[in-house]
Length: 368
Ligand SMILES: NC(=O)c1ccc[n+]([C@@H]2O[C@H](COP(=O)([O-])OP(=O)(O)OC[C@H]3O[C@@H](n4cnc5c(N)ncnc54)[C@H](O)[C@@H]3O)[C@@H](O)[C@H]2O)c1
Image (cartoon, rainbow, N blue to C red; front, side, top):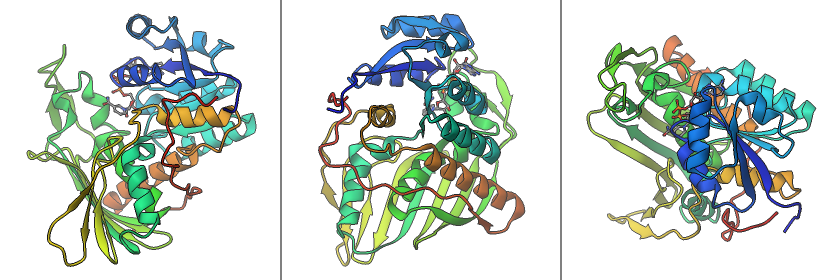
């Protein structure tokens, strides 16, 4: 126990993903969700009611609360920087959904603002802190596959317009399979290989419009303004190369593939967009995978905010940092630049890599 008691949380953004966060955070004793805010205050009130959160209202309302120490920012990507910056200005720590922001400059400005204010900034995805990817990291670090050399990533689906009730933002700048889904895979890759040095990529779009498939707006046609197929080669600063495909243009759905080939074996991680799942290992010369079962509390979305809350109360440094979020954003924007320019693009930013979590790390236990 580090002491000090649960850290007060205010959620901004009561949309689709808030349901998972609020359900999970109720099971994390180091967090106490005290307020939900949204531009649409009726939505904030309804969500607060469903999940037993005592307060609901506007963004200024939540920022004025002294009992809210961390803002969990679940707004849409184009609003991330502005909402997070207002929260920092109000003296709050911020946990941001991904992508960190939608452009490098606002991301850098936000980190600088937080440093001067002495508050912490964290960024999703926190899936890499889940038992699945942490077990894979521990296996790789202890040499189970020899020296890790290369990686293959596959994420391909027909696209989220089929199930998301308001999917427009997923097909606009800040979205697409690159900014929406690559954060999970690139964060997992950087946890294993360290910062990305450069990227070469190609992209395309199957169609200039999509039709909403579910919810009250089903049948509505909206514009697509980002590539919906992206294929990229990543070069890591301290060695290692990865090939990755991120697609909303695939009639066949195949997701969650992250395979790391080492000198002695290939390891397939659990789905980087999930918190746990089996790991598979194929040793050199063996035809079949061997499955390694993963144990440990799954936790779910919000475990990075728990790690941050423990740092707020004086524990270790937190792990899903804004520096990492900005690096992953930088790598994704470099991927987009490479697609446009048809050249290899250098990634300038870095972050400080973190070790694997201890095997008994558990977001569902009280620590603060
Ligand atoms: N939906 C998913 O499955 C999913 C999964 C993982 C991560 N995310 C991420 O979570 C974030 C939110 O996604 P979502 O699917 O919940 O979106 P959503 O559109 O369902 O909800 C976003 C909510 O934020 C509110 N909002 C927007 N701008 C605001 C502002 N300036 N101030 C206050 N409220 C504001 C909207 O009114 C809306 O209620 C995105 O960054 C997305 O990448 C979504």
